[in-house]
Length: 186
Image (cartoon, rainbow, N blue to C red; front, side, top):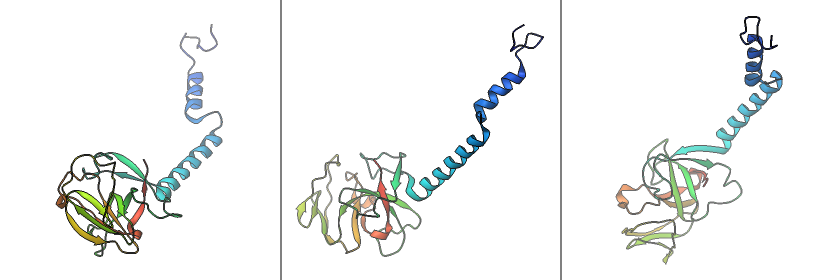
């Protein structure tokens, strides 16, 4: 008779049960429980206070970010520095002082204008203080025209990357610094 079989020739259920318990709980259940608690607390802190998951809805950030893709916003990115031109940011909307009027919605947009600059579009070219901005992330032809608009001292001018669609279908404009939640990773 083999040690792992019962007298009837069947596998010993206590050995199978012991193996299953070790596979699920581990050899030391207290250590396993401590690891689970640490993992849960770490995930809670990271996803509550540091990384905010965001799902792209719509095509305004094409071709850089695709519809229904999942990304993360680093909430700590701007604690020690200001947003830079070209950064893709998450913007919490609300308040009547901005171009964004939908409360409780977050947009993902690219920073193109910094505080104190003048932003305009002429025949599809983005002009910052009258100088055309090189935007290598854009694909396709833009035909926008927009009069110069001065960005305030605590504001940033943001817009999506898909400028092939009419500007009337875009949500863009000045965003207060306090509305910027963080920088989008990748």
